[in-house]
Length: 71
Image 1: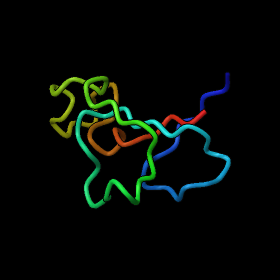
Image 2: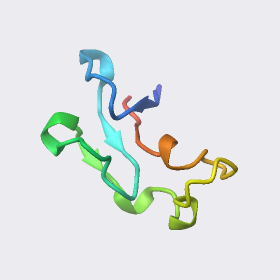
Image 3: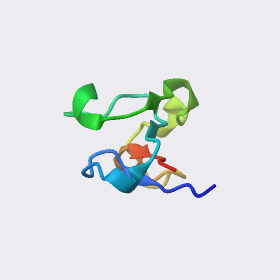
């Protein structure tokens, strides 16, 4: 199975396949209908300690947390 990572703000493509959002918080400025997700797993996202905005966190801060994992 091939898994691709894509930012949730990028346009939806027919080739995306199953669209999964793994993030504790819903992305700002994006409605659930516009996201066109198949599943949202808020409990699987990164821990709250990474939400401090620091660029030294393993995830690169809050700008890198909104991603889909279509297959």
